[in-house]
Length: 284
Image (tube, rainbow, N blue to C red; front, top):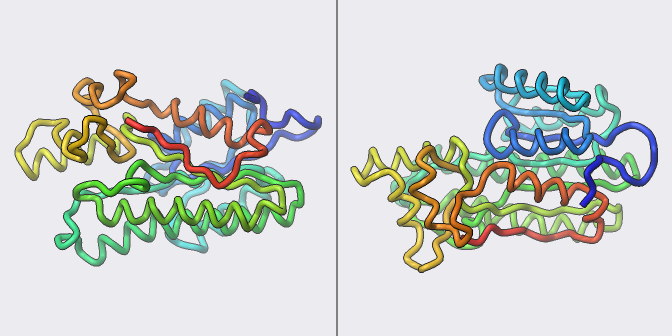
């Protein structure tokens, strides 16, 4: 596995864009790709500015990479277009787009307000679509290939309780990834996605706490409820009472953002040049 951003030719470092970079999986990916030698375009909501600035300062100091922070909403096409334009203007090019940003909400389908459905579709699916679109346009223009990586989920392979809309968005990302891989292979652009199970990030904690407040059940019970099979599968991001979830994984531990980051590090490397259209699952 390559540990540097560009192993083929000397010259400027490759550039990776990461959305939803302020915390959780996106934060872990940013740290790993900076360690690999990538210059970074980091994107998140304006309310995450303090966290994103701390991250940028940290990787600049530790790894000596260039970092550009951009703020906006992935569900707004003009914000994603501006993201890519800003990164190209400031850092020179785009080699990798990691469309990581996403949200989740626990709702039974018939209790899901239309505006909530629209928000999930907007951030998760449309946001990923816009990232793929503008990254592909730039990579085709550059003419030297590239890497596009999206965030699916175990919920993009199997439907889960109270996750009808979230699951639909993650199935959509899986399908779009496969189609995009077929469209862009001729340009030397690979398109893949990662599909985590239980990863310890703030989002899983929020989901579990919401379930506890709604049902009165103990913390950790929501994740236990998502499957009745001996091997349980759950949605992607995370919790604060990690010990309660360890028994869900055949590995005896919860996933960490660094685990996903290692996979992304490989997918954006030269070593993954013949891998495209995949969705790498974390099977619990």
